Length: 174
Image 1 (cartoon, rainbow, N blue to C red):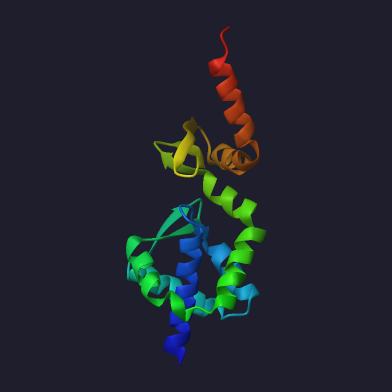
Image 2: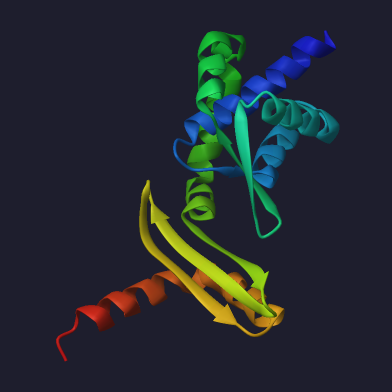
């Protein structure tokens, strides 16, 4: 019975990642949904995620110490075969969750910033993506980790203004 339950948790995760389309979901978003619905424990979620990664059904990238998950082609294929094992009620709860959290989910994936250390300097990479297109992708070298962290923290709230400013400045005919 435990194996069947783990299979259901994996299918829920695959279904969530499949429905989010080209975006990613964070560990916190997946965990929050599953725990809030009372489907299982944190241990089972992490075991399911780990097995999905090991089997190449999902890929994971880490951005600023936050794991972002995306379904792979192999995961889509597996979901196609076993999706009928997820109840319609659970599928609807996932769709409702996405509808309710749409802005947050979209923002998590479209606007990101991260930094790396290189030669005693920090390179901050900031991006804005819409669907699969990159609207803005900039890298800034700064002298301290504190500045790099601050830029990353402020990027989410100021990225639209920065984008509009750059377009206006570069487009104007002064």
